[in-house]
Length: 334
Image (cartoon, rainbow, N blue to C red; front, side, top):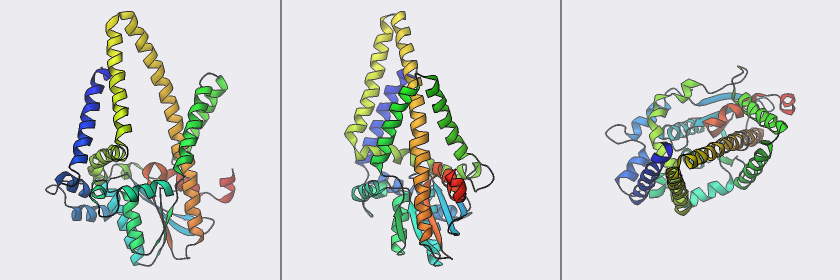
């Protein structure tokens, strides 16, 4: 059933992305840049509401080695509410002369590419407005130092490839399965709430204004990938289409063939799930948490005693980074 509907979903999404890209300079582009239809939600009202109750999606802590205050702003990428939240936190601290540095979850190459492809004021930027560029713009306007604190994209991809190959080898041994289990337990422990450090909770993820902007995130995220490399994105959906067609043709040949195909697909999906889960958990989350925490800790060393370091992070990183920053040097070593 899934394979039967997959081609239709792929076509619908692909056509939708093409249409959105085509009209990016028109009404759709303008509406998406604001995040909501003007009759439902004006940009000004959204910003006022997002600024209210600043505790949501914001973790406050003191880095123990430098005794400097750190604010972690958890965001849903491309969400208008997260954009407003990031801008508001930076503006408020800068107006009080209490902001030292803004650390954003980007590396040099990714951020430079984003600034080149969708510069400030362009129609493409309006269509794909995001919290990372918005935070950097506000910080630079206020003459605040901006630090690109994420791991280099090349290192992330190399790590993902190495982890995928390691997982393939581990799947065929008992010790390998133990290693996979230990890695997944590590990521769960790093994200769990021990009560000893600030953590994002259900109230942060279920914030009505964040949820209201979620459809915009779901449109902008794949659209950003499509506009960056339309050929690869189209090839991906074409591969899904071919896979679905070949599965239907094979299943129509005989009951035995259908059973064999189903078995092969089940095994493939299981292996793919294990590899993806481990790569995402360790390479894209845990290891980047460490890099981001190190960048924030370095920024704290240059902050004044009454100044704050603000970090703009995806919500998935906040709890892990907060845990790392809240620990003492001895605990970090362990």
